[in-house]
Amino acid sequence: MNIKSSTPFPTAALIGGEWVTSKKTFPVLDPATGDKLADVPDLTPDDAKRAIDAAHQAFPAWAAKPAKERAQILRKWYDLIIAESEALAQLMTAEQGKPLTESRGEVAYGASFIEWFAEEGKRAYGHTIPTTVASRRYVTIKQPIGVCAAITPWNFPIAMITRKVGCALAAGCTIVVKPSEETPLCALALAKLAQDAGVPAGAFNVITTLDSPAVGKVLTADDRVRKLTFTGSTEVGKILYRQCADTIKKLTLELGGNAPLIIFDDADLQQAVAGTMASKFRNAGQTCVCANRILVQAGIFDKFVAALKEAAGKLVVAPGRDAKSTVGPLINADAIEKVKSLLSNAVSQGAKVEMGGKPDDHGALFFSPTVVTGVTADMTIANEEIFGPVASLIRFETEADAIRIANNTPFGLAAYLFSQNVSRAWRVAEALEAGMVGVNEGVFSNEVAPFGGIKQSGLGREGADEGLNEYLETKMICLGGMNA
View (tube, rainbow, N blue to C red):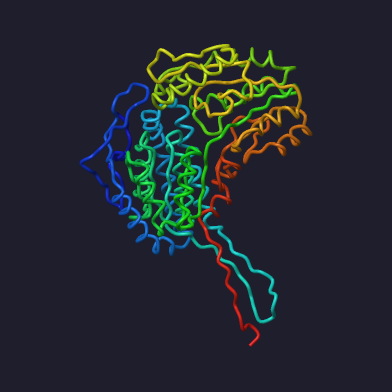
């Protein structure tokens, strides 16, 4: 791994300010080549407990710091990330596979959360409340919830950490992070830069492990951990939800999605194609907000299919480090097998592969950009997250049909619609059962807007002021005897 940075990125875990190794390790592989990038410690549940101990010990001092002082440290962390942005992007492409242009964008996106929360943490305002009794006064204050735990995914290995850790630290919390075993190196690099910025020992800990279930049980069972934040599958989210019940933890769960993208007859065709391409093929289709079901009204269907095929045909499948790459590899062999299975099932039920539909010859984990028509709402491909570069198209007739199909899912993370009719756009946006709706936009996430879903897509919000409140408790103080 030949990545130039002003500070060497670590391959050890971080507990209580100390870089921790172990006799037992596991390899981190480049999904584009299968080459080993590094070995990292395979830590145990006991190590996770040590990390909680460290976070618990660090919490009082960190929480007591004025918000402005915490903000200054976070701002320095942000500055260090920006200074190392190219090295971090190369590291991300090496361990996650996405094109380098996307990795650069994610580093900037991830850093934006630290910058935002550094400032927003200074605005954790309480209230004065008009009294009900002459001798009393009521006020509320916001206080950090305490030790937090974060379990993060592989598809956005920097942004999913900064969105949680930056917010927790800004609020005055300390945190233990368990990154995905597929992409631990970005987490460790972020922790090193945070340490360099002055984040104190124990405030930010990183546990690398292959034994996620056992470590997860430690994080959920310990009553000193007052909040758990998780981004990942709904199946795992439900397990963590149950495990947190005994200690009544506060939860932020950003879980699976099945995003509909609706294109009406009155849509701007060029705009709709561009939005679909951005939503569907970003990160090789491996995002929780990807357009999973593309609903196209009958009057524009054929034109849209032709235009989408033309646009998708310009995508370049190649290792992410290739300057021309726009579609990198999938994360592992299971991901490839899932895409192949979903496509095979759809074709067996009458769907038609318009382009692609097979692995690409760049390597074992590459898959060709694919467009499939003839998909119906009852097919498996329309009911499970594809998590690959496959655009599945469903034809619909009326607005009511589109809304019915779009909402016929237990998930409700993101939805998209394209229409030049403002009344229709507003009406449909209100009717869609999703936590986020993009109107004539295929990518909408940013640090100033709340991110999260409804139904089985999760609980709580990240980003924006709503995100900060997820790490704060409101305390009411009643002052009596005021007229004595």
